[in-house]
Structures are given as C-alpha cells and as structure tokens.
Amino acid sequence: MKAVILAAGEGTRLAPLTNVRPKPMLPVGNRPVLEYVVEAAAEAGIDEVILVVGYKRERIQNHFGDGDAWGIDVTYAVQDTQLGTGNAIVTAESYIGGDFVVLNGDRIVDASFVERVIAERERTGDVVMGVTRVDEPELYGVVEVENGRVVDVTEKPPVHAVASEFVNGGVYAFGPDVFAAIRRTEPDGELAITKTLDEMLESHVIRAVQNPGPWLDVTRPWDLLTVNGQVIDRDGGRRAGSARVDDAASVAEPTVLGEGTSVQPGAVVLRGTALGENVTVGPNAVVENSILLPDAVVGPGVVLRDCVVGANAVVGANAVVGPNATVEGGAADVVLGDVVHRDVRLGGVIGDNADLGGGVSAAPGTILGNGAEVGRGAAIDGRIAPGTVVRR
Image (tube, rainbow, N blue to C red):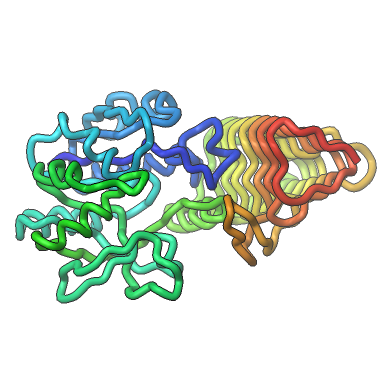
C-alpha cells in the first residue's frame, strides 16, 4: 500500500519561523516534524510515499531526496496553491493505482496507528478514519463515533457545540473512488477532506480506528516546545560527536545537542532543550525548555526559558559588564491572527537572523520577526515585525 503525506502547508500561526521554511520542516528533537511522519509510514511497512509539497517545497525535496535514506521510494506531487487537504489528496491521484493511506505531515504518530488503519481497510474494504482524544477538540475536526463507525464530522466547531471526545487523527485509508468524491464536494474556500468524508456518510460506511499511542500536533508556537519536550523524553537525549561541552558547564538529561554545538564554561542547559548544529551557548548562560535552530548564538549570562530561537539569531552576544538579555519564560497571553490564547507557556519566539543586544528583556509571549534588531537595554513585548529596529 502507498502513503500520501500532506506537507504543502505554510503554517502561518507559526510565523516568523515559517516565513523561510514550511511548517513540516520545523525541528523537534533536532529533526524535522515531517521526518517522524515518514519514519512512521516506513515502520508500518509502506515502501512508496508520495509527498504532497507546495510552500517552500525545495526545503522538503532537498532533505528527503528519493527516500533511500529511509528505505522507501519518495515521489513528489506539487500543490501549487494551498486549497485544502481534499485538493492536496487529488494532487497525488496520478501516482495512485489502488488502496492508499493518507497522513498529515505535521502530526507525529506511532507506526502502530498507521498499521491499525491499514488493517481495518484490508479487513472491511471501507473508508477508514483514524481518531484520537485531545484536550482542545474545538481546534480540530470533531468526530462522533458509534459502534466503531463515524456518524458525524464537524470541522472546528465552537466550544459549546463540541459533541464528541474524538477528533480527526490525520490518518486515513481510501480506495481510488475517493478522488471522484472529493471532486463532487463543493468547497467552502479551501476544500477540506473532512467535508468530503461528512458528505460520504450519506452513502458509505466510514470506520473509526482509535489511536493507540501518542499524537503530537504542531499548530502553535508553544506546541512546538511541548512536542519537542515529549519527543526528547520519548527518544532520549543525544549528543553529537562533535558537540563540545566545557567541563565547567552543566547539561542535564534528556537534551539534544547537534553537531558543532558549543556549551561554554558555567553555562547550564536544562532538560527539554534541543540545540541545533553549530549553536553556541556562552559562559554562564541558562537555557531551559527551548529550541535553538542552527547557528544561533546565546551570549554570556543570557537567560532563555520556554523559547524558540531561529537560525543564525544572536541573543546578548555583545553583552559587556551589567545585566544580560533575558527571555524569562512562563505564562502569557498570545495573539495569533484574531484569536487571543490565554495563559499559554511561551517565553518567546526569536526569528531567524534577529539580534538582541545585551540587557534586553523580553516579556513572556514576545514574538520577534526575522531580521529584527533590539538594542542594548531595551524591553520588548508582543509581536514585533520582521526587520524592525528597536532602541531603548
């Protein structure tokens, strides 16, 4: 059986990190989210994968190539305009000749979930939809299930209208007839596969298969930190052979240190942290529950908690005598689009190539755009646009 993995989306809620890379290529545990999805498909016995790509697709194609490193054959189907998951599946039609599974490229699942969905399709010949339980079902497609069958699918209902503890798990099994069903579906802007499935309920049996393991979804910036911590706890810490940790530094377990990383004297790196390739953590700095992308630099005495630092960003590296940059972390109210998310754990997001001078203080929930510059001693809060220069 072949797998179609949907990886064309941008992920605007994760900007500025997604301004230069597609959402599925954001790292957790120093590996792209999409890599975990591809591995789950391979471990489930699938040897042919069609990756549906679009936004910044060269990042994905350069990373996965022909799939040989994962023991699979990878083909690319291009969705030039992101018109929804239903449209993305149709993009792969020419590569499909029989039954196939579909996986979302931004949700990490165990191979056992994929195996169960495949087995149910092979047993019954019916459309199969994987479902899982989550804490905030209103963020997803809510699925009502009776006696192992899907009876209703509602995409992102208001909280008061949530009628089930199950949501769409992002794993499906179809036959080729689904393409015609998708084409018959009238889109509401973007065409979601869940709308097609809801319409198919009138004439088809759709089986529900419950997720037997973890289900890790990256939708918002703080989700990235949560999933990073869960993946590191699950898979254990790793330290690349060329990573250098000074004898006077402290690195807790589990943490992940990439190739060429340097942790300098007196620095403390606490659990749940992933340092990408060639990251530098300066003397006496503290980094906790954070993700630092490749080539980021943390200056002496800097404190970073609950933070995502973009590639080639600099935090307090020019500090001299006096207080150093601080992203203290903790609870914050964060605005994404037109929605206020209250009391979420996010110290901040520092965009690629941003530069924070010594003595800068960032309030919890600060999101600093790519290439922004914050002068020494300034205090920042909220969302700061890319390229902005902030002075004290």
